Image (cartoon, helix red, strand yellow):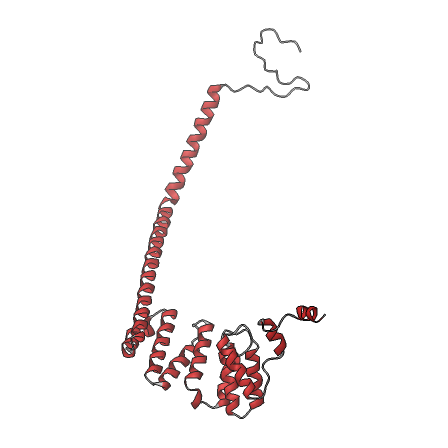
Length: 270
């Protein structure tokens, strides 16, 4: 397309067929001006936003900082309190070891009323143990029973307290009552399976159930996850009651190296 005489720029005239309106090329000065106007608009928007919402934002920030500071203080105070409670328990245990049971009982008394769940439970165990050492069986049983009945106490500690309560006055308890108390603890895999089962077997002996007691002792003897002192004792009691607690004596002797392995024995015989 030929240029119109007198036209010196390169923009195309509007209205020509197939051509759009003229599009001027912005200069560098125009770009700078546009950026300055855009920045001014942004600053005006920010100023208007802060004028409207600034006080509320400041209040929120202050509240957040205050809450965070309070949380840090609470954490520090909580740790200090737990440390003090632990020191009290350790001091009481030292008193128990020294035989000063009255001092141990008095030292942990504040934890019984104001201590955390863990500290209160430990304090009650200390007091119950001190009571047993001083022959105060009824008081010890009451303390163990209170631990076992507290749903806030972790289950293993409640189970231990129940076991100790029954064991503390086992001779004075009705055997059937003792069995009912201990049966939930006497399932295989339970933390206190061995001790609970042994007491149940003894309760059956009190009731005259020799066969049932012997079978329970045999089950204890066959459980290699239990302490050896317990399994050996159970094995002997099962034998006394006429129940064979060793299913395969020959296999046991081979396992302990008294007899050679079966393959070796056959090879020697061959």
